[in-house]
Each structure stands twice: as C-alpha cells, then as structure tokens.
Length: 246
Image (tube, rainbow, N blue to C red; front, side):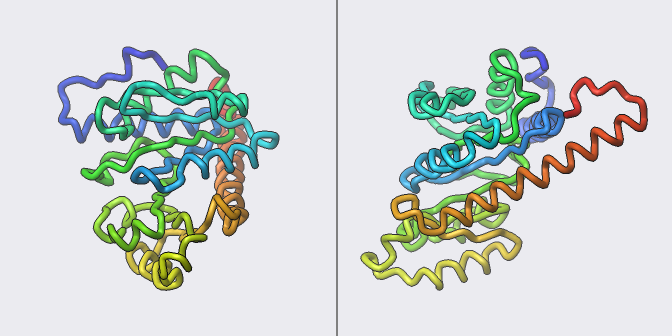
C-alpha cells in the first residue's frame, strides 16, 4: 500500500468512501486480521471496554488499535502500557473516523509494524450523527455502544448505526437499579430495532457480561482465522504466490 494510492480523485465523496472502504477490507483480509469498529457517543465506557478487551487477549493475540481524536492527539500511554501497535489520526472537529482516515492509519501501521502478524484490529470511533451504511470503513464487524442512561434519554432507534450494527453493546448496566431502568425492556427494544444484531449488556465496572463480550470477540477472530487459512490453501492449490495471504 502506498500513501499516494489512498486518494481517489474525480469521484463523489460517497463513491470514493465505498472504494476506499473496500480497499481497507481487502487489506485486513490480506493481513489475516479481524477488524472491529467500536462506535459510540462520548461517555459510554468504550475506552474502558477496549482496555479490558486488550488486557484479556494481549497474551493470546497480536492486537493493534486505531483511534480518531478531535485534537489530533492520541492518548497512547494507555495502549503503550500493553505494548501494542497504535495509530492515531486527526479527525478535525468530528472525532469520527471514515474510510479515508482509517486507510491513513493502516498506512502508518504498515510502515512501523508487521501487520501480517496481526490477529485483531480494534477501531475506537465516535458516532457520526450523519452515519450512513455507505460509509463503512471496511471493518468486518460494526459494534455500536450505548450506556443504558443514554438509551433512555436518547433512544437508540433514532440512530441509524444501531439499526445496522452487527453487535449492540449496552454499557453501565450496574447503574440500572439506581436509575430505575428496566434492563430487560431495553434489551427487547434493541432486539426489535435490529433483529440480526447480537445484543450484549455489560458493565466494565463490575465485570458483569464481560465474559460474554470476550467470547463474542474470540469467536469472530476464530472464524476469520479459519477463513484466512482456507484462502491460503485455495491459493496454494492455484499456484498463486502467497505474498499477502496469511
């Protein structure tokens, strides 16, 4: 991948984003890595969930993290404590990573590390209020997060990303009793909004539901790994050089 190839001129922004997202997905597949895009508003506990996830898998998987920051700076200390590759990309005032900015992050990773050794790439993303399913960054799975308090004050039905996500994570469930929130009803509402999504209620504070989340992540990595191995066997049979197939 070359940095110059990341710009596709003379196309509408939507078409360009689709093309770059497809290229990002192809890059993830070539590396044999599973990419999860965790998207939410601020205050959902997303960073804490990422920390718990990395801590759980850091001695089992090769992990990298990508984040978008409004200020153009990335609080790498947290991630560097785990010793994982990280890439931060300025997102101006939005905090939202699109396909183009993720492509730039992949270029950074490719220059500094051996991405073909990666098993899991985690994207920490801010919810874009103008989210469109056409604006995928190329991830294998989209994870939409909302705190249970936000589910009440700002129903997830109003956010398109929750209708399209592969997994919906309801966070801070330890506060349900204090806030007098019917958690079962929230889960039912989420399931009605997006019947195909996996619904995972959890609390990073108490650890409740965390094991189920980690099992879900582990399953996605395992399934992707099997697909990569199958692709490698198929390429071997067709005598195509295995330059980018894990």
